[in-house]
Figure 1 (cartoon, rainbow, N blue to C red):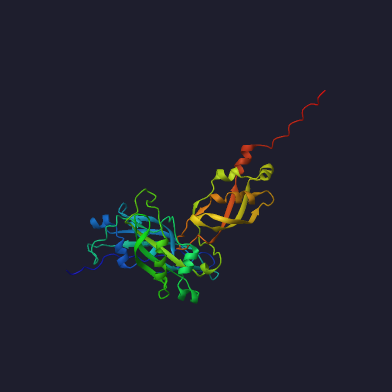
Figure 2: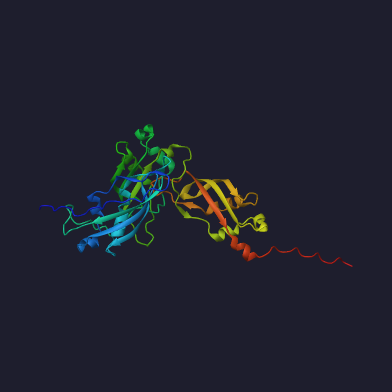
Length: 353
């Protein structure tokens, strides 16, 4: 049977303008192919012969990977084109924006069109995926810095180069991954794909997503970034994603006595910590505190057991085994109003006769 031409295409992808002082705006290195667009075509829309479009907004990391993508709009609504566009995000690769000659994060808006035009794709109907393609899972386990460094391809290490490999894997019933296919490898020829595959056994995700749906059988896109900075001792985490932080009540509970007596309820503390098992932090030290001398540094240190990071970043970097800087701000001026003026000392009891 003769195959008809695939009627699915990506619109011209427009970028946000460069920020002030930026030497270069973000630019494209790789866009999804017609095949990958077809692979995420919403099943419900295909069954009704509906074309569609969506616009997603994303941040471009210093590695050129898209993160924090969200659907700004979709037409027609209710067919899943917004979710399909977000599912494509791991397949994009960009040159990061430059400011003063250094890579910086920037924002992009990406319109994507699917145009069926009454045609059937050369690959048959889109796979019945149940519209479940996870791009940024809340990994319960992931490779550590040491494991990524061990897997770092020799050719890339010797050249001082890095890059990213993206895999599309099937999620097992226990949250592990299996049957991983290549989505992209940039640059090629450095062994990044093989290295990423060797790290797959270290990934594990919760068996249910945020909506309570079982994830077994769904697909997961996994980004693995090999950054030369990982080869340094205690490398800094790329962009930390916090799973748990102290609440406002926790901050209020550790206001130092000296600060309470002086009615100073605003302060800022910067800490540096090591990231350990399960994304917890340990070995913390205070870099700075303002104002000084009121005990806010020690107060912040007492809260470190309540911090917890994601064990894998959206850029595809490990956190366990790395270092993270934690800025903690105390902004509790309302306590001054609640507590009122400082209490007066009670008068001494009258002398005994």
